[in-house]
Image (cartoon, rainbow, N blue to C red; front, side, top):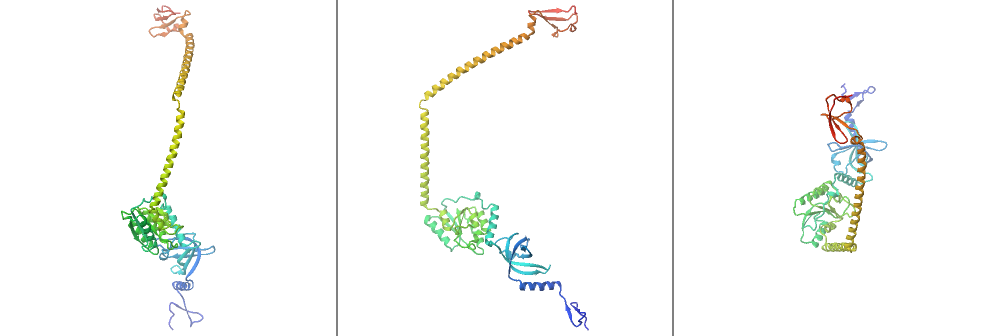
Length: 412
């Protein structure tokens, strides 16, 4: 009897029956096949957490609700087709299949597409890009430039077959037929449209004569207008050294291009009117400015006239004012002289008083009462005690009247 193979084990109770076993890889493959056949093409609702995107470009995250969670992956090819960037905390509807990552036996949701809950994907992508570019300063008013006045050369970026181009050409041609127009026809919707628009703006910047660029299209749905919400178009407008007018025919809603452009027009027709105003409108504006200037000058003259009249009244008799000032000077002079004399008299009295006090303290006053002062020569020391003297010393004696030189013959 042949020996059982490695994949066959003889049952102890039923020797005639053989039991087969599976390897782990085979088991995982069977589970994978079963899951994919039964759980394919599903929409799963949940909240994203633990989102990460390694250098490979794949999206790895957890999709969870309040009771459970499942690991999920969205490969780069599918993720690159999204208009927005997933992030933690977003409530999503994910479309895909449930399968097993056989290497580790992990159950995963393989996502082919996803949509935000409560907010369309395009709306979310719009808000994300708007926030990003605003933080970088692309929308700042400080960098926006004034449009040139009556430019001689206008660049246009729009569809070569659309009504928008014809409207712009008609407005400019009717008002200023001598103006030069450079048209860069591009796709304005669909795949590749944003890149064509950006390249056209760059190309017109290389044309030295172009003074202003009108970039736009006629109206349409959000999807139709989406090329003007692409980051590549926004950065092309920001990098343009020629002022750009955004002219997307959507009247109320704004595109990203509107925020970045130097000026925004609600329609292509309005953009042409903005760049090339009617001569009649310019004349009306000149007339209005003339009227305002004339009115301002008249008001200023009237104000100066009133001021002059007031000054004339105040200067009706300039001699009177001069005489009043002369009289005031005389009064001040008399008062100053009186104050000076009083101050001199007070100083004299004070000086006499202090002189008397000093005189009373003077040693010369003592001499008048019969006293004398002896100075030892040659030191000129005042002698206060006989101990300072020795026989033969010379003394100069100061009297009330005159002096005498004496020699010490004897001391007591």
